[in-house]
Length: 53
Image (tube, rainbow, N blue to C red; front, side, top):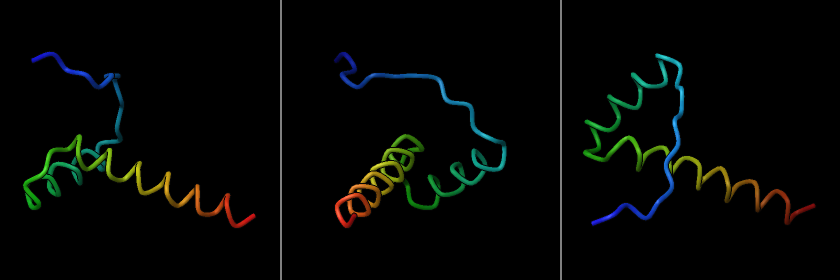
């Protein structure tokens, strides 16, 4: 099955990648899922802050 989501290279600082590696193993989730989820949370926070202005 072909991948539908666009891909790009992302450089992470070593401590950020290490943290992602640990969290992904602990939660049994992929690094991709964790990064997407964190960005979606930031998007929601930004949208709420923008709506309150």
